[in-house]
Image 1 (cartoon, helix red, strand yellow):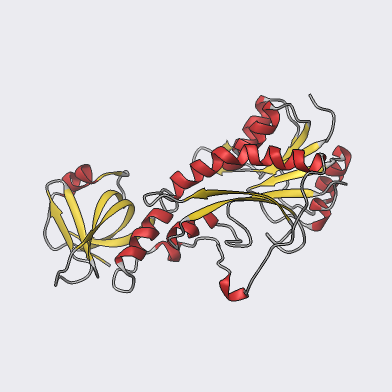
Image 2: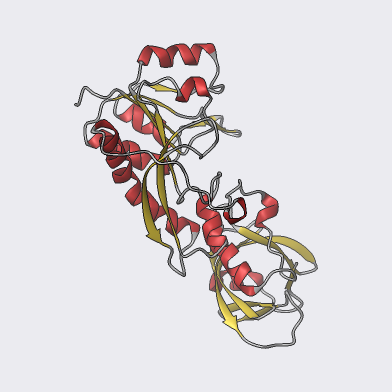
Length: 319
């Protein structure tokens, strides 16, 4: 185990776990981790640990789970750890008292090519906006969110059929090595931090948190291409949804995968066509063929099984 630097790792998601594992396997001195408090399953009253907490317990790494990052008891414990540097991946906004504590500073890993797509949901928004590339950025944390000096960047191509889930998996695979490379660059003075270059404010694209309203498909307003990219960008979570009118009632219908069929037609927008193993929905420039979905009250399933469960092919539309 390397004695220097003393590292505190801060994160909660499976995305951040990849980075923690990379550091731990390479025997960096992880003196503690900070992660979110446990969640609870209401009915069973069972605790749900974050992936970071599970890993910390398995490997006997000390951990803290503050509800309030300005709590005196938490700050005192963190000061006792006396970290040389903090590494942050997928966590809440840190107050200055936390990120400014280590003598070597705190750096963050963000899943976009900053300064583009600052915010909580960059992986979703780059696909919704049909970008052709994205990547990872490491940067020193400063007062303004996602605006500190850039350390390193790693660019990757976005494939035409990528979903948010597939893209996140590919970014996850390169996240650990980039964090280690950043850490080594800081330790050996091989990285010169650079200010984020912003040509004009109008050229910036942002990645705000996805709301339930953002997930609803607007069939009559948006183009086929936008709806298709929205489905990709929200799959598998939180998932694009619509209301499916079937058997004289509206049911929430999540769509996880679809294919474009470009074709002229005169059908009303939102009409649903059911065939033995195919469901297609009329849109402005043709049809969207649904590959996988989930009707309210049912499990997620492929379209053949979903159609078998409908037991009707008449008077169906989306809204």
